[in-house]
Image (cartoon, rainbow, N blue to C red):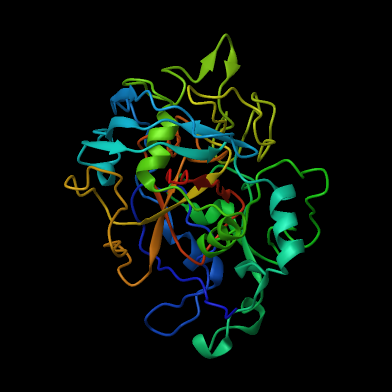
Length: 372
């Protein structure tokens, strides 16, 4: 498999807390600015703002279609139905207009794909992820050799207070970081077998899904599933981050990015399925790790796509028009209600297709076979 170098620019963009491994681009002057500096471009200048409005996508409720046959291992049935996709939250302008969507039923992984599952895929296929491959120096003339090495983006809390708009302060490009070594060559996934796999780009997620006989969810499927049949609720489970004093999501508690109080019991990713399921029996549809979707990213929606929408035919991010991007959903353990706020069911993220990071994973879906 040929290596495609991750790409991005320094231009901040909307509605995302990090793109992942978009580290290997250079400014137009030809001066090398460092992979980390380039990588952070996918942050939003507005992502730190607290969202005060309810994510009020309406779900009419599932239709009465029954699960077809026996549930595939680790998957739950999401019955077909209608809902209002998107949000009118003023801080999430790329998730408009709110529009009606109708979906057929589908199977969805109950949790995010774990390290254990991804390791089996790699063992049986010999697959090599993008983060494990070095970019071709011919694509980056003049780039420092020490930067043209396999690696990925890792969250690194700063020592002192920093501006929430200074995203460079808490991310660094780490040579040797990949799915087996999420925070660098000295790290391991031993003991983290049931945590979601991270440091996987869109291409890696697609490869796994094909091997498993599944696919990535469309953005509409993901949002509908995340809402769990609830009407007009802020979160996947209701309107409060805590129920009975217990956190309902693996997110950041405390002053981001310096102080995580870890009141939910986790520093970083949590084992898949650690939190209560939503109305469809799905875990971690908010927080923990961002999840890749099948749709190309463009700001806003085409409301004419109302029946099993597949999204746009191509990618276009006005901030970075030359970089192909796919949608990411769900937010991550780095989001809080004071920063990012992307674990609302209607919130969107985006990332270059060949880029991952220490807070990006995925889950799969399966279309039931048509009755003969």
